[in-house]
Image (tube, rainbow over all chains, first blue to last red; front, side):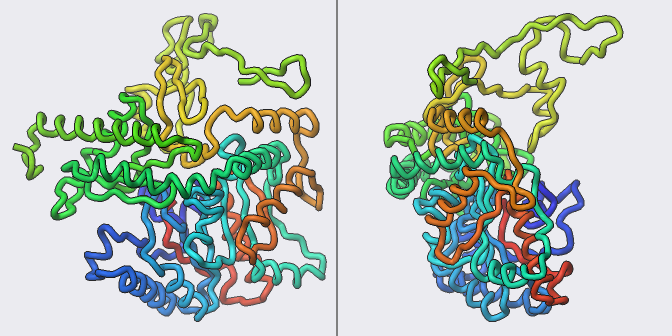
Length: 318
Length: 188
């Protein structure tokens, strides 16, 4: 995690003990339709999207519109909690940005190259970013490679101001490393030949349906949500009140370890008790059934362990 | 993990036994590490003695040891104990085409043999990067015009911040120069 990216993120673990964020960044609320929308009395996607856009407007006004360069968001937030934006979110945000001449960056490090069932998340949610950051799915992890895509608005200025011979004084020894870009070409060949973006679009709803069917009624599962081949399971101590577990319990990490013992790798996200599932696109329906079954078994095991431990601060433990 | 077979461009997977490796006992004066008591050390022990892991509780690594992965195929990976897992996380959201894809391994090998490295400063270039940039733009939103390469998602976001600082210096908008703010609704 680099210093600027570590400043842009809102994950406390990345900030604390590292003297971050640097002062160039300000944060607004991430869209969270499970917790935040209701807590702020928004009962429709439209109301919630408008409220988040108003929050951005207020912050831009407070900072001074002329000092705000850009706004960055992931189409679906990944490590921050598999947070799916309310309908119309990016359209409402874009109105605010356009009013103040502020650039929009789509962070597609996770979403890019098919994860949401479209080549880019910006296409799925029908907005036009000025810049796009990508990495992971570009090579499927076979080589380290990122690509920053520069849109017309920024490129035209760079182009226009190139006449004096100035150097774009930024880059890395390994920018455009031929082994990494060759791996990416072969990876894109596979994605196109096997129709894996379309496959992710087709299998995403199946993954969400199967997982919901299996685990949504578990007494420590508050929410099961997904978009394309991204799925999040949010664990709570009390389903009615959405009360989270005390952080010291590290409940998601505990479920993750039980999953491992059952031959299933998933990820406990660092920010809260959310388990992320994001399988390879080549997965079959039978494998998805197997993932849902193992997750169900792991959750049941943890519920039983909590019962046995008789932690009386959990209302349902008797 | 791959060795070159006799036929050019063909690859065969080597069988690897990774759980244990034999090492010589430390000679006099050589540093001895706390977990290394036997000459036959486990990879897990060497890990505990040698590696600082990213995004890891150091106490967990030192008391429970690492999980050492050895092989991957399709959607599964196998650790050095021989236990098989479905990788429902695709590594860290990335192994979208699955493990063990020979086409990619061959492309890597061929490129390494042909031109293992060259930089892109001062308008230096290479065919793979040129073709990839065009190909990315073909599937990207239509207003995208250029591609800048790095090696990680983090560095892409750092490059993006620096590019915007550069952009604001080009347009000579002093108020949006280095002091300019980025507003983030992101937690990656």
